[in-house]
Length: 136
Image (cartoon, rainbow, N blue to C red):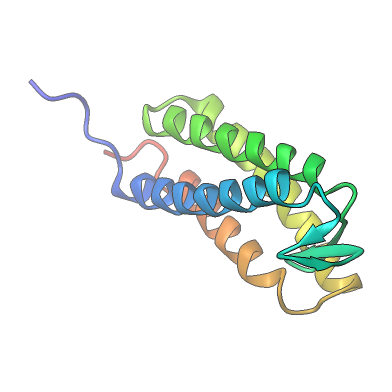
């Protein structure tokens, strides 16, 4: 006998979150491992830009570690959400809201374009997580 069927809407939200987490993990690992010498891709630079948010090259390894941990946390929360735990859904919503606010702030203050696609991606995933709630 198979387990309870999960909502396809939640499945789509999970796929969006897994793909976004994979990108976040890759960026985090590049920053963590690739910027220790003060160079980024072989060129000396004072900062790198992530979706319109400037990151000082000296802080890039710390930011990379935080992004790596965040990506792994998002995967864990997504697994919980797919298993029907409300805590996963709430955790994804809280993290998504904080990141969206930060991206929109970057859109207003530094770069009007590049923060918007990730903000829309995250907003769609959060909306779908709640839209698929309780459906089977």
